[in-house]
View 1: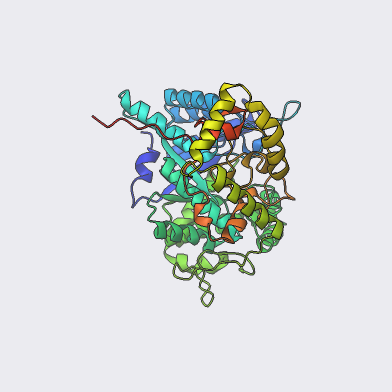
View 2 (view 1 turned 90 degrees about the horizontal axis):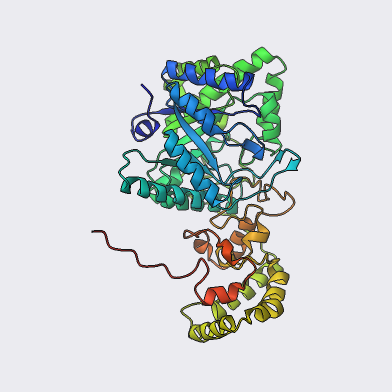
Length: 507
């Protein structure tokens, strides 16, 4: 009988174990055979609820999780399919979702995805038509349609969150985005990878403070010297391996046999600590050759589970200048009642830029303003006379290109990102909060530039307006408005800010 991930994750007293598998750049062969073999042994072992299959990790081409997942499902193991927004537009994503429903794979981990890597002939085009919040919303809508047409089985959609952010801005935006993902339909979350117990606990405290009840799985990884090096160097987005841990792992793996023993012990110890502090389960990665290693980790966890408090200090890092949302400075333990905030300095140019654009927005782009009807009449006349291009070319474009590096999307979203452009400022074009790939405030892709969401948080904090950042769901960009006047589109209710149509009352 196939273990049911949705049933297990919905059972509060059940400690869930899932296993992440990474397909290679081949349709068959040793790596693919290993994945199938590990999955078969996991099903026979009985302690694994589901295996998750990655979707082109690192943005590089690999075997689709869909085809491989169906084979694994047929062999008796439930599957979580990673579903990213990077490679296809909204039509392709909905089509793929329908295909998964047809194939019977309805456990989804909805992700924005890593930036595009190299495929045939070079780097692939990054699409990012959606972000993970909008993707979760798409699956929620598909569930409504499935229920309406009589389906008893619907999608179980989960999301990722990265607690391992060490600046106030990144931490704030990560958790605010988590709230948006849950509102959009996510029913479980899986953390990114780190080895800082205070950060793991931070997520649980945030959930408690906000009344968030969805289950959370904590990511673990069998860390060897091959994987530790890129993780420590920041080349794996969202993952944190400290300098101290990196040096320890390098020393341990001077002897491969001893290195593996230490890796298994470290993974087991962190696993029982995370179970002890209240996680609903663990999501285990780094297993590539044999399920036997997973068995050793789980056996060791069973043996030391009753002593989990003894291992907590091993995973507590020196805080230094790192930001923790909840921190008792005297005891070093995370405490909800002790809120610590950074003193953030904002350049005068950033502040002036924000104040100028905010003032302009309040004057000219507020539908409740006294002059709003006048702007609407002017926009209507320009549109009807086919002369709106004059406004765009001689006023709007020069103004917005200088101040925002405007990409002329016609569906402006600067008000959602602290009056910074999400199209020109973010390589992934996210409108619902930052991705999980930033490192110490800097962009995952443009590593010499601050993440646009970090900049937005800093300038808005100066004016006490951070609660307005990622405070609501932002619909996807309307591509049909490309190269048209966003000013005209706003006043004529054509863009994503148009008034919502009233929904019909349920019968």
